[in-house]
Image (cartoon, rainbow, N blue to C red; front, side):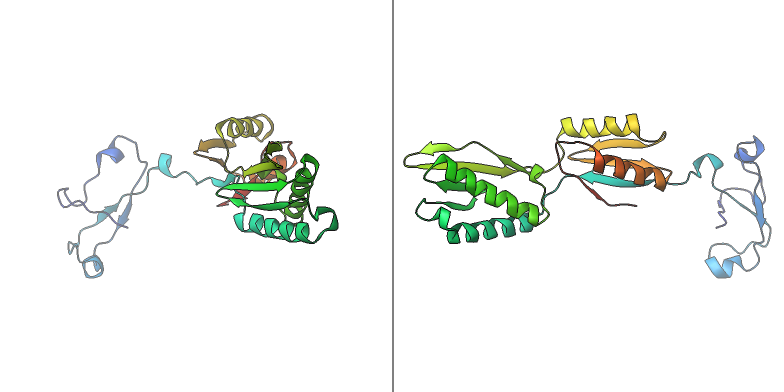
Length: 219
């Protein structure tokens, strides 16, 4: 839109035109302008002030790399595991169970072998529900009185170490011009080429990484 500085003489040439910083301005007839804008009724020509060329940079496309587990699917896997354990003959009379204990998944049985079997059932249910086992951080069985306990937690977010590894992988093997920046527990990947971004996603899906990844906020 036409920009008119009330303090500037109408029809004058701004300094940035005079010194060559902006190549040209397009005259804009002022008749009728005041009726449309309510700002100017001067009939003399004004100057349209364009965007400077060095600021007219096309925006990059981008997406975010995250590592977030679907808690509802983990709940579903746990409930299915608990149901199977309660029905299977080889778990009868061994005190086998699995449940949430705060943010920890607690598994119990009367022997080390049986509590590991509980974990195995749970992991199989997670896989069937599409939850990567990379989200699960399971400890070792520990004796507690007459039973064995095994605790597991869920890993979420990209820690700094893994985020740096992924960023380095993108820089080393991705196309030139791709940028990767760490923001909290996420990684923003951007490029002028959408094809290059798709290639990065394929690269990360096939990479041998310690964390499970999702690719979100593609824009």
